[in-house]
Image (cartoon, rainbow, N blue to C red; front, top):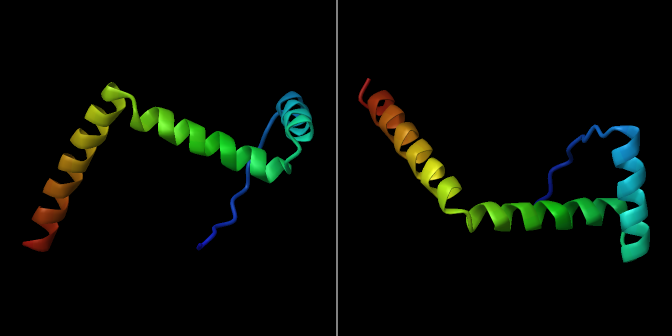
Amino acid sequence: MDTKAMTLRLSADQAEALEKVAEVDGVSVSEAIRQAIEEHIAARAADAEFRARLAASMERNKRILDRLSKA
């Protein structure tokens, strides 16, 4: 699995709450963040409105790329 390092800035309250959640769940803060991101992505993928916006965005990008390839 390829990985990518990222920086995340949280408020002090968010960081403290995240640390407590991770501690209670028995996982590292990094793992708690990865789990939350996976849950967020799954929720977005299940959202019909999001999928419609995604399809529209992909179509716009396809048209732009098609134009660029003919330039």
